[in-house]
Image (cartoon, rainbow, N blue to C red; front, side, top):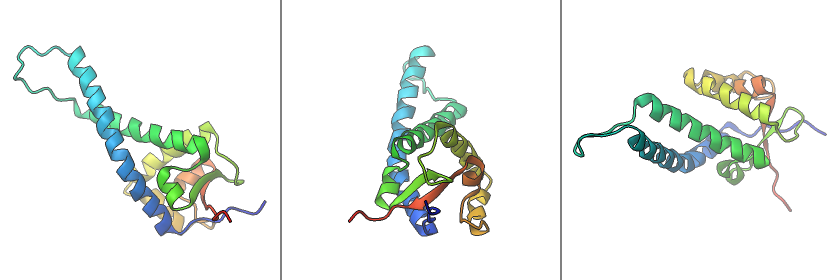
Length: 149
């Protein structure tokens, strides 16, 4: 089996933008669900009192929502909807489907890559196989999906 071909950077970036439009409503819905649970657990004496989730809870809800979104799609076929639209697929270093452990490692490493001002993304431009740092750390890579004839 030949080595997977890395997609152009712009194709991966466009897949991320596409997925962002899908993830934002998921974050909003999950935050609303957590807020509903929160107001049931924390009693409010005055009905005019504004109840707000602690910022850490909102952030944790958002991170978990995004992680679950990517985990489910990558586990089911290596592609999110944005990746399907732009013909990008997540595979292991051999070009085979990724494992649960690899997905979890990639999610953790990608969070750190993005959180460090995107330096993990810049790794792609110096890597011989055009892999991101989180791909190197998790034993995964992105590849181009060829059009079916």
